[in-house]
Length: 286
Image 1 (cartoon, rainbow, N blue to C red):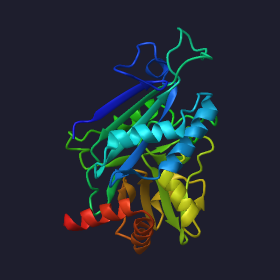
Image 2: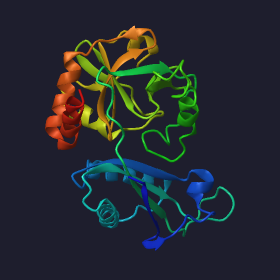
Image 3: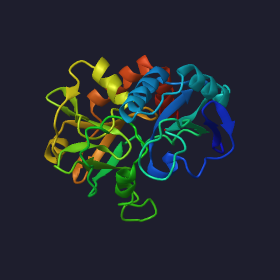
C-alpha cells in the first residue's frame, strides 16, 4: 500500500503543511501510531488518553475525539490491516520559541502497511551508545522530537554485513539506567515477575506496556541496569503495533524461547484479536 496522507488545520482540510508550522520548525507536537485490524483502530481509547495527556503537558488544544475518530475511520475505509499514524502539532506561529495563544492545531493522518512479521527465533538486540536525556516534563508522552532515537538507530545499518542481523537497540539514560528500545518498551523476567523501567524521567509510556502492567499478575516497574537485563530469565520488547516480541540475544547473552514469553503472548492474543491474528500469521509462515 502506498501511504495515504490527510491533513487538517483546525477542522478544515488542507493540501500541505504550512512552512511556519511549529511541528515542522521545532517538533512542537505529538504523535500516536495505531494498529488497524479489520477496519478498526486498536486500543483507540488508550491512544486518545495518552494524546490528551500530551496535549495537557505541552499546552496544545486537544482536537475533539469524535472529529479524530471520524477522520480516522474515513481514512481506514474498512481496510483489513494497516498502521494509522496520527500527528498533532501546535500549528502555525510567528518566528521564535514563544508558543502562540491563538494558533489552530495541525492534524495529519497517514495509513500505511503493517510491519513485517518478527523472526520466530526472536530479536537480536544491541546496546546503543546514544543516551536518552532526562527530562521529566516530557517523560511518558509521545512528543515529536525523536532525534535521540534517530541517532541511536543510525548506529547500525541493515545494509552493513556486520550489523545486518541486529533488529533493535536498547537505550539507557544519561545516568546509565536502562530505559527502552529505540521503538519499543522493554520487559525482563526476573524471579517470576515481568519488570519494566519506569518512565518518570524519560521514555514513552507505551500502550502495550500499559496493558501488561494492568493485566499481568506481578508485572511492575523497576530500575534496571545493563547487567539486570543480560542476567534476566527472559526479555521481551513490546509496542502497540507489533505486540509482544521475544528477544533471543542482547550482546553476547542468548535466550531460548521461554514458556513465560509464550504465556504472555497468548494472554495478549486472547485479550485483543489483532494480536491473535499476528500470532496466526506467524505460525502460517513457518
